Length: 481
Image (cartoon, rainbow, N blue to C red):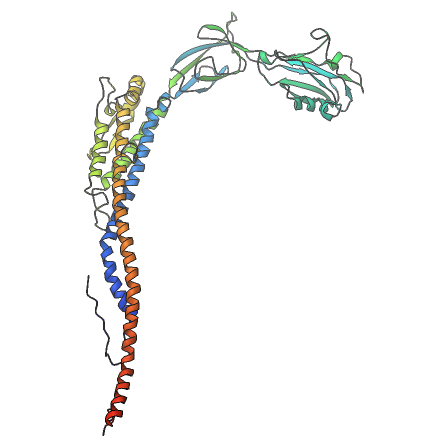
């Protein structure tokens, strides 16, 4: 700490001195104690920023790897194709699907049951009601005018829909202006069959719908089923009578959803057309995922390597010479270069992933080698990433041990924790010193203001002494005579 001197000028001038400047000079010396602490804090902040950034990059790499090690992840994705998309269109193949070829013959498509009435004038007044059942459900009756609706086709349609009876009612208008009541089952296939009550199937409560404006010749206004509810029927891999209530089939092949569009073209002897459905492993998505892993690995390794040098100002990077930097480099390089087991595909090298010639820890991917491995040894590629003790689990453990997860005691997490402890101590030191400075600033200002007032009073005191001297001696100190 440098010495601070008080410059009073002439003690008898009465001008005193600059209290504020003097206090500031003293405070500056006290604040100099904080300089090394704040310098350390700045360095630690830069280090923390770098560690956090590297932790984020390792987290991204961990996500890439999880996509490959997860049993329901990219490795499980499937694609599929149909030999005749006019008969059968493949919709999706989930991770539950197994790669292979299936044969399907479509005997008939699923149908949704419907019913319709005779044509009447849309404004005619109706009487009575309709009684129907859907599948094996209860008989339901809706009378015209129910729910305070008009006794017309539109009113009856509205009443049916408001009652939520398992059908959708609508009014269909013909070209001549007449209209029909239409009922369409909300359940496809045979389970949604609409049955209209009549004197035969329900003699005690048949449909009594009638047109009181223009009487119709048919009982119940001719309301009857016009399309039967049918299940789709097919033969799958030689197994006959596989049925589906919908033409969107989800259960015939595990994990596969396909749409039935037609029965196809039968052979001359009437045999239905056979369609081949091929389910394949989605190697394209896997190649994309592995390529992303390589890209993100190189991004992380390049950022780590950059800490070995100096910044644009010539100062060492925040992690230069630290043990955590060495841990990151050695851990990643060791993990990607190891071999596992006795399979042909027992390392990343077998997938075409090799160290770059620059020997900086980065890697490169040969797309042809990867494609060949996936096509010839798919199960071994899956094992490399998903078997216990193989690359996937080992590298996952490595990333956990290096990253910013406190639960796994990652190297970055521990380094951040250590820095935090130092930062707490340094900040406490700065806080205490600031409090001391504030106290001394107040005290010094008070004391120096008092001293300054004393200096400013000296000329007046000298004058008083001089006047007293003159009075006693009769000698005038200010006289020139």
